[in-house]
Amino acid sequence: MSIHDAPLTNYPSLIATPVRQRTIKIIKRELKAPGVELGQVPSCYIRALAAAYFESHRAELIRVACDTVRTAERLRQLAESEARRREKAWADRHPRQGTTASRLLCA
Image (tube, rainbow, N blue to C red; front, side, top):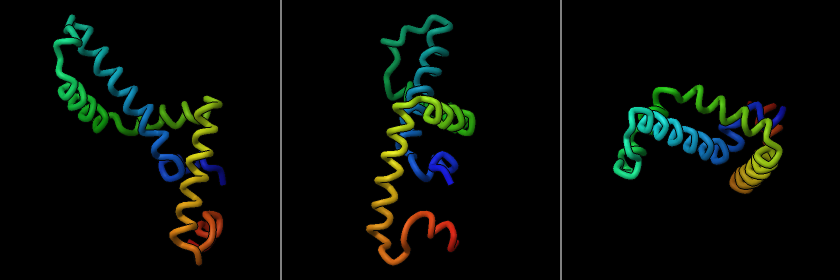
């Protein structure tokens, strides 16, 4: 089983960053299209629009972020690192239950 089979479990922080960046970029592009000056738009307004956009397009944004992590070498390395850290933290909190592999086999 690959860490990429469950990205939201294995490296959620790494997925959240490109999702947030992409969402903000989309909102800014949509605001600029009709000629809105981005400097005149409060950042809290942009973040609120981005949050609403994310709720409407959650699955697509997450899918694109996961694909990006799988295909970009540096992001893939960061994903593996985050997955190892999470696995170690889980094992430290649950010493009797073993590794992810044993968790999955026993579930």
